[in-house]
Image (cartoon, rainbow, N blue to C red; front, top):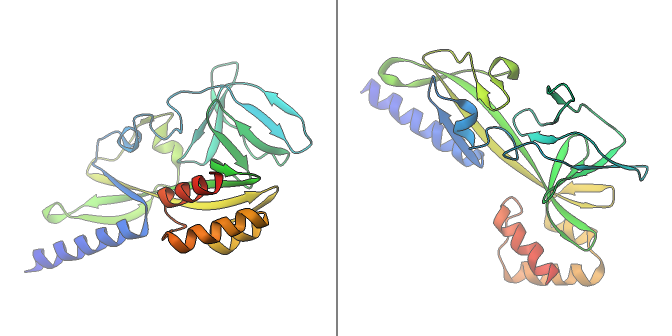
Amino acid sequence: MKYCLCLLIACISHCCLLLAQNRSIRVKAGEDLAQAYSPQGFYRFPKFGKAVLYFTGGNKNSGPLFNYNVLSGAMQFINPAGDTLDMGNNMALDSMVFDQTAFVYKDGFLETVASVDSVQLLKKLILKTQIENVGAYGMSNNTASITSMKSYFSGTSVYNLVVNQDVVVTESTTWFFKNGSNIVKASKSNLLKLLPADKAAKAESYLKENKTSFDKESDLKKLMAALAG
């Protein structure tokens, strides 16, 4: 009876976790944490690539090879010595444009997903990690989050993972609209404020006819596509 009760509690907790997050991945002890998340590990792109950096003063520059680390939330680059380093905070940076993808910089990096006229749809991906001890009957018990990233990954490889501990990676996405320097959370009212009058009327008409969640990627992409058409 006690085992059944524990199992029920675990199932309920897991379901709540899935509802609260976009995606949840459980990685067994000894498995590669980064590779369990994606084929390119915790990087946005399979390999480091060239990017053009645009600054608020109007200047632009193309430097070393870059890649975005979604776990740490840092844009990283490879220096002439071959070391992988974080860019750090740069208040003068406006955006970074890769071959097919652009990032806006505003207290961190937000990826551009779609745009209509001067309005852009942006997303902020956040990953959280939770260590779980495996107890009796193979049940997992939550412990502390992974706070020292370097203790658990280097590039796309994981090392020093404690035996008999699982790790849960939870992924959540927050959506924003941008017009000029104004970045606001994605919502109907915020979108209508940012759009010009003709597009705002078109958006309102679309939203009346189509059920749209401003937390769902597919819905937001359909909305932006409709406004662009």
